[in-house]
Image (cartoon, rainbow, N blue to C red; front, side):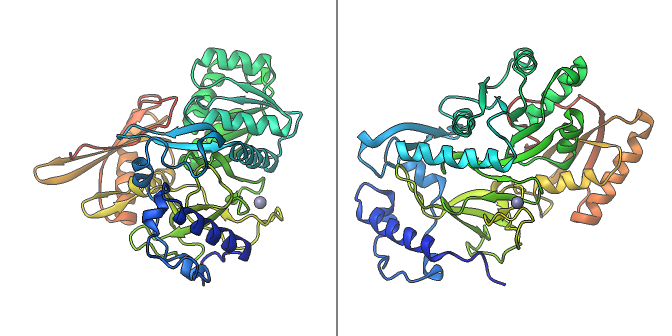
Length: 415
Ligand code: ZN
């Protein structure tokens, strides 16, 4: 079984782009592709020998070294998280901004949104690509955007009710927080919400069910990252079997993060993206560090766009305890298999007496007399599925910290 087949049109486009960037002495690809026979590149196999582009390459280009057009054609910049050192600056041309909105509007359409909808946007605005992308797509679709930005739960709920919002755009943790607040206030019947478009961080089935049932809405996962336009380059359809990604704007590969080789369709690996039309900052073989897989076959909705699975984690989220590799997604799967546990959990790993010690804390609505039993079940499942036994700790509902941004769940204190 071979990996996703590259279309001729995609290949021609990438080859032309690679040659153009390599010839441009201000491009990071000038050095990266030096000495490679790009003109002689004949097929997908040749393409797969090209070096990857990583976030470190992008950081080195700070401030505006990624620009592949004269600066007067750049109409906007965005920046991805600068929490670890130099930020990455992505320049956009007018066409890039339009192309992004086209993809985002397509996402809303796939989610069944129409110009009738009123779309409440809670992701952040500013250097982030989040809020403004949700807004541009909504406006291109012809829907009404309600550009709230994050936080101020009281005002969110007032606007949601008074504006008659039908679609909520949020991170999963913020959608969960709003669900809890709406229930607490008993105001569901005053709201017109029908759908949630949720940012593509890794989130568990329990959280999903909690929001879906708590609010009685359909949920859609939207995918994207600042380096490649932003959110809105992929979304699941009503059949909810993976996210469609738009292969007329980008070429997608899944690789083994250790070997760098593409994996057969259906296997988990790291998503790698090559832009096909981007002008401001075209990227070739950009490593997203997102763990997912291609879903083989055709979607029942009939759309031909390829599908990727929900993001299972970050390749750098991988953590090793007592010699066992784990993703947070696996912890969630185990907790899901134990009735009575909730989707809120936290993992703490420390080093005690020369040994790793992992503690899994999880929330439960069960009475305290059941805690010991739940903890034992969690320990047993870790042992049988992952071959290691952590400490397990049951706590009451609402005890673990929530955040309006992405919730950090794994704390590695081994230094
Ligand atoms: Zn579909």
